[in-house]
Image 1 (cartoon, helix red, strand yellow):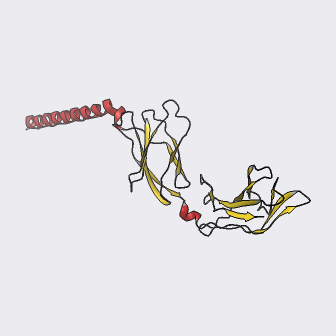
Image 2 (image 1 turned 90 degrees about the vertical axis):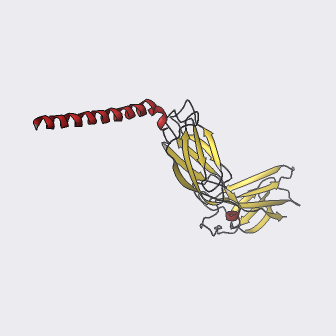
Image 3 (image 1 turned 90 degrees about the horizontal axis):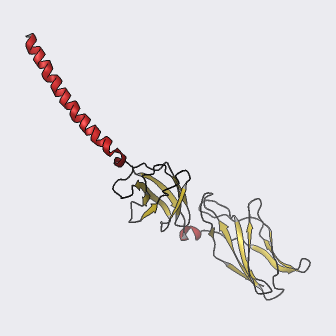
Amino acid sequence: MKKLIYSFIIVIAAISFAACEDINYMHDKYLAQGEDLLIGKLDSFKVYGGRQRAKIVVWVTDFRASHLVISRPDSTLKYKYALSSTNRKDSMVFYINSLREGTNILSWYTWNSDSTVHSIKGGTTVTTWGPKYESFLQTRKIVSAKFNLLTKAYTVTWETNNVVEPVFGKAAIGHEIKYLTKSGNDTTLIDSYQSAVTSVSILKNYPTSGGSFRYRMMYMPDKLSIDTFKTAYTTILQ
């Protein structure tokens, strides 16, 4: 009986040893190819929306990742970017164009140099704005526009209250005025409403008669937007 038990134990041990050998063989196989099995994914991925485009800021430390692929799953839109081969301490910046206005779903992954192995895929969403958003933007009214004999400059007086677009409730961040000086030079004046809403704009070297100017308002739908959005020009004749 004892002999039978010993024989059984030996058989079990032999089977276990063989199984371990198989597992070790498979494990060693993967260890040998480990460098190629998985490319490091992005350490950080940040995205900022703009006018139907996006700014992508990435960090990746794995030098085996030679390029980045970003796509929009619901379309054929796909971009491929080369990653720096020498510097992985600093962020890298890329831009995606031709995005649709509204919410866009993006996916990304990194590839090795011969595009045979890629990283685990990641994804995010980004909101962009375009013609539809701009169609809602409001224009601030002008109370008066006339040449000031005391200052010898053309003075534009604005309506006291700032204008607010009805989509996100964002107020205009400033205005832009274009005009020809009395010498015939194209001039652009940009007044920003960073600390307070500008009530008066002074157009220097403006013609004393027969002049004209055009203006438009500037908006940012989000504080992180990479683009400024503007209304259509309004022309004022003297």
